[in-house]
Image (cartoon, rainbow, N blue to C red):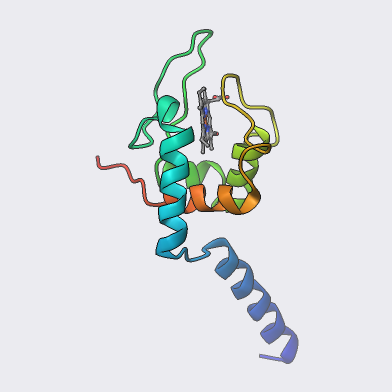
Length: 123
Ligand code: HEC
């Protein structure tokens, strides 16, 4: 390996590490409180969603690994979905999904995402 290969490998490793940001238990706990306060009425306590709002709009299933796959493993895109109501391709999500930017800071939305990673499909 020449030094450029080493530099590229380090960069890639850094990007992967950032994407797989390991959350602390405190972040997950903070995210759980926010989720229980702001999200369960539409997405259910287990994150399974499936609430029908008419016009074919159904609240999303937020459990792993489906959500992570939809958002290509990019937590920043999930934070954007929560705060700005934009899907993985930048298209607006349907009402009544609220835009949380005025309520949740980026750090708070990060905590919610840390909690979402712990909600798994059991079947
Ligand atoms: C009033 C009901 C409601 C509340 C409250 C709500 N959501 Fe949603 N959410 C929805 C609906 C409906 C959709 C589906 C929108 C669509 O399909 O375009 C959705 C979609 C999403 C998505 C996109 C999922 C995907 O697969 O693209 C995420 C992420 C999300 N919600 C997270 C949250 C979080 C986190 C909270 C709490 C902070 C929250 N939602 C609160 C109704 C709600």
